Image (cartoon, rainbow, N blue to C red; front, top):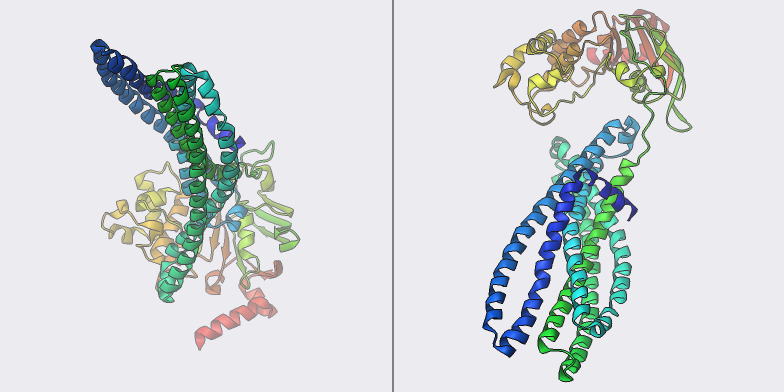
Amino acid sequence: MKNYRRLLQYMRPYLKQLFLAIICIIVAAGCNLYLPWIIKDMIDKVLAEKDMMMLNVICVGIVVVFLVRGIFYYGQSYLVSYIGQKVIIDVREVMFRKFQRMPMAYFDKHQTGETMSFITNDVAAIQSALVDQLIEMVTEGSILIGSIAMMIYLDWKLSLLTLVVIPLVGQAMKIFGRKIKRNGTVIQERMADITSLLQESISAIRVVKSFVREKYETDRFQRQNQLNFQAAMKNVQLTSLLTPTVEFLAAVSVTFIVWFGGYEVVNNEMTAGALVAFLTYAVNLANPVKRLSRVYGNLQRAMAAVDRVFAVIDLEEPIHDKPGAKPLPEIAGAVKLDKVTFEYKKGVPALSDVSLEAKPGQMIAFVGPSGAGKSTIANLIPRFYEITEGAISIDGQDIRDVTVASLREQIGIVPQETVLFSTTVRENIRYGRLDATDEEVEAAAKAANADEFIQNLPQGYDTKIGERGMNLSGGQRQRMAIARAILKNPRILILDEATSALDTESEKIVQAALDKLMVGRTSFVIAHRLSTIFNADQIFVIDGGKVSEHGTHEELLKRNGLYSYLYNIQFNKQNV
């Protein structure tokens, strides 16, 4: 229960509300405990002694008790729910910030759906643990303790006989609880798998439909759903066994009460009203025990989610900024890679001994076969990954000696697949610089050749573009990404095959925008279409994680190396 105690730490800011909630729970439980005493007085005084005054008092008491109980029940429900919701919000924010700080390597290894499941399914289970289960645990615990106290007051010998069964109930709950918690972990993992599959299938719905794989995806989902069903039924089986086990032990206890209590009434050692009250408290004792056993089972299942959440929160974070790191001042844009080696997986170099130099304002192009390491170089410059050996410097300063934020603020990236947010066109472009005015946003769009199509949208710049900008064409999305980069006004620009997925007409428009964007900036261009880099100051041919050759377009063609080979393949195909 270590992690549950950690979870309760999140309640510290709300101790005042928690204190009031506990008072409400205890008062509401106390009202329930008063009802058996009313029955006792009804039998022993009203029925036996014909006391009309006591009858009037009892009737008024019933109304008052239920009124007070209703008021405090509302208070407990509202306050505990308020605390639970606030804690859930806090935990979600902590997890979201955690994911924002995690390195790119984490997201390379984990599916998007799995990450989403932590913040949705697992945190929802925590909500159950904090709100529903906590209310029931405190309520039933108060009734349990109060019932025991009243039973001891009525007849201590009968109470001792009743309480013998409690250790047996505790042992049963312990045994079942361990199994339920283990199965709860499986359930949460199955839910994560379902979320991952849903995210994957829905985000790739165009691919699914183009290959007519609706049935295949449905079958995949059904298999995963069945696994989740099996895990859920295992949980039902365990909780369903726990409850009747506890009920049977409670029934044995009640049987002893009936016999021994009846014996005492017959021998005038106890009144009939006291026995009925005692039995009522015993039932009150049995019900909380039964309910607490169910709460315990649900809590164990929720604890599996709590453990998963804290496993994420406890993930070791990379040290983005080393001690003494300073902000990178405004740069000219000179970039140097000195014998850089990088490994995604230890012992398997993705880059080996790569060296290159870019002067301010130069255009540097990377070409080579797929998987050669072109994008890896581009990812190392903004420190999405940390190099294994060597050094990368900007204006003579090692990028590991400066803060990551100040480094990335001066680097702009236009990827092959543009990522847009499901908000307005204006806000998507403003993402490049959040304090930009509307005029600056529109000026950036004009510079990116995007203003014309934006003006033709239903609400112009205030048009919501839908999830991932799927309502726009590829060329339109790419021009918005360029506008975003223009607004950011970086000194270093990285273009990761920014036009390779576009048709010829869109490519010309986007390339014109890119040409404007690259003016006066140090640009690194990962090229698929060699026609886009003929004017590059230096072209580096990457093959097998190494620089196989470099030079201008004309120089590389004369060498008849890999670049010349790629050029001939590409342009011979175009001329066929």
